[in-house]
Length: 164
Image (cartoon, rainbow, N blue to C red):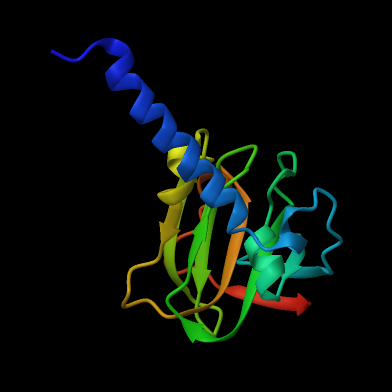
């Protein structure tokens, strides 16, 4: 029969390796703790938000990593070149998020609420939020968890871009 150390040691080694691989897979310009994203203004239904704009691949990879919780009037808007099936990961996040996917007309195509941050090295490979394949999105909005409930955001909600 295997001892406790013989069981735990390989698991700990695997967790360490997965964590290192996850960290090494982040582009170098995404690792920086202070990133200046362009700022824009959007409206979801009647709620006006100031958003950080993630419209480059390094910016989208970096996202809200390392940032403190946002007030309800702030968020991050991921902008893609063309509609597609995009996923986000929660690596190095400090707080849970509500995620809202929008199509090119600003219509909600998918909502995921209270997505927790990754808390361990083992989660780095599996901590993604995925929009179902049938829902093509051009924008994804990340906001502090509770935003969707607080402002009654639904599949009938609409994104209006004021300035990005």
